[in-house]
Image (cartoon, rainbow, N blue to C red; front, top):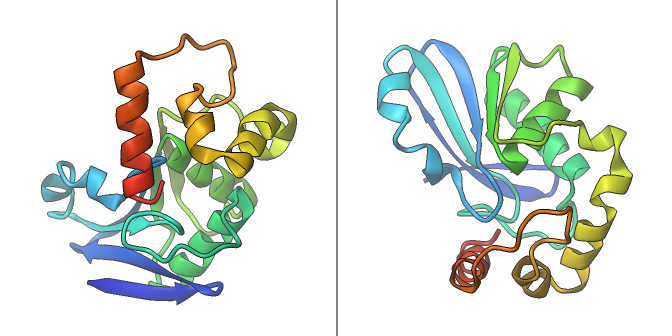
Length: 174
């Protein structure tokens, strides 16, 4: 198990292969393990780093810094600590948000961004869109997720899917 201390927290990461670096960021309520199926092909000719960002998977769960700004700062520190030379950053879901924000704020650090199922906007440019869901998560994380995440016009998922998602998120630190 490999850990690195950044910004007052400890992040778990895996680092395999050699070549052009790729940095993979998981989505909400998961961990770097979600990229396992892609690794065997990619590590043949790339340096592949997967990370469990703060509060998720095998990383520490600090009370502070669990924000886009906090995670992006952690990623900047991680790129430096691991001496990643302009990685392509691949993020899924909210990991796509982190990847996009990292690219927008620090284009000199990375070679590119691949956002897989991320939003079609930069959260830092539209904070009002996130206010309701974020505030709901602060007040009652399980209740907000069970309630559909704060609205947005999306259809409500079936109750069994909501239950499974809430249980998984709470069990794995999402």
